[in-house]
Image 1 (spheres, rainbow, N blue to C red):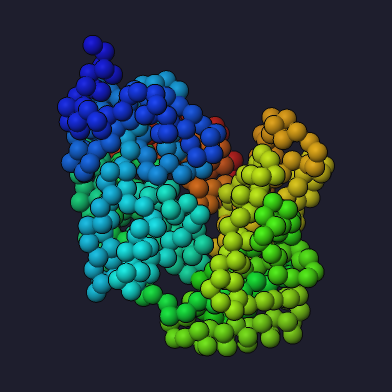
Image 2 (image 1 turned 180 degrees about the vertical axis):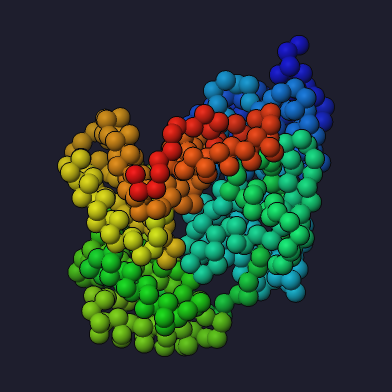
Length: 484
C-alpha cells in the first residue's frame, strides 16, 4: 500500500467512507474552478464534519506527507482552491462545517463555521434586526471561510471595509493539526501579534480557517439608490468627494460603470433598461443607507445632486422611486460580468490603485492598450469608492476571442500590471492570488516583502503541505522596485 492509499484509508476511518470521495463522478465538481480555467486531480475529496475532524485530517496529511487544498464554495476567480494535476494532493472541503454557532446582539457579532453560505449569514443577521454588510455576486454559494481566506471585498467596502475589517476572531487548524481558538469577539486586544489578520487573505497556505466571529451592524431604516451620468472618470472622483462631504457614513455604495459596460448589458440583456436618454462616458451607481428615515436620505440626495449639477460634475441623474427600481439599477451593475461572458472570452484584471489616481490610470492605460492592440474594447467597472477596478479587455469586434487570448493575454497583462505598479497599486484587489497571480505578485513586490512572506510561510508550514503553489512561491522571480 502506498503512502497515498494509506492516507485515504485512514481518512475514511476518521470521517466515514461516505465523506471521502474518490470516484470521478463524485470528485469532478471539486476539481475545477468556477471560471473553468483550472482543472486538477486529487487523491481524494475529504468532507470533515467538525473542527476536530479537520485537525485529524491535517495530522494524517502531515504523517503521510500529503498536501491539502482547502475549499469553500469553490467560487474563487484565481484558482486558489483547485489542486494541481499530479493527483497527489487532497481537497479538503469545508461545506459540512455549516453551523451558525450563535448570535450576540449586544456585542453585535455572529459566530459561524467556515462552510456557512454568505447569504445565510445575511439572512440570520436580518432576522436579528442587524446587518451583515459583506455583499458580492456569489453570495448565494460562496462561504464565509472562502471570503476570509481571500479577504473578499464586494460592494460595501466603502462604508464597512472588506472581510478583514468585518472579522473579530478566528478558529484555525494549524499545519501541525493543532486548533487555535481565537473566537474572542473582542474589538480591543493588544496582547501580541495579530494572528487573525495573518490568516485572513492567506488562502489556506498558513492554516485552515474553521470558524469566525463576524461583526454585525445596526440594520438601516432606509436605502436610497440612484444613477448618475458623468463625462469622465475624473468627474466621478469629484462626485465621490462631494457625496462623501454631504453624506459621510451614509454613503454605502459608489460603483463606476463605463459606457461600453452599459452598452454590453443593453446588447445582451435588453430587458435591463438604461434610464438615461443620452449616453454618458461613465455612469455611477450610488447608495445611501440611512438610520433615520427615507425622507432624510432623499433630502440629502437632493442637496447633493443640486450642487453636483450646479458645478457641472454630473450631467444627469435619476433616483430609484421604489425597491423594484433600486434592484433594477443594481441589476445593471451586476449583469456586467454576465454580459462580458455573453460577448465572448476576455482578459480580466482585478486591480486597485489609490482612489485619487483612478482617472489618470484609466486614461493612460486605455491609450497604452489601444496602441498595443488596436480595436481592443475596454470593459472598466468597479468599486470606485475603495479604488478597486475590474479593468477588463474584450477582443476587437470580429476577432476570434480564443486566438486573441492566446496571442495577447501575456502582453496585455504585463502592460496593465506595469501600469498598476507605476501607480503604486495592487494586481489583486479582492479576488486573491491563488495560482493565477502568485508568480506575478512576487515579481512586483519588493525583495524585502517577498522574503518576509516566504519566511512566514516557512515558519508556519515548514513542510509546505498547506495549499502549496498558491499566494507565495519559494523561487520567486526578481522583484521590481517601486516606479520601475
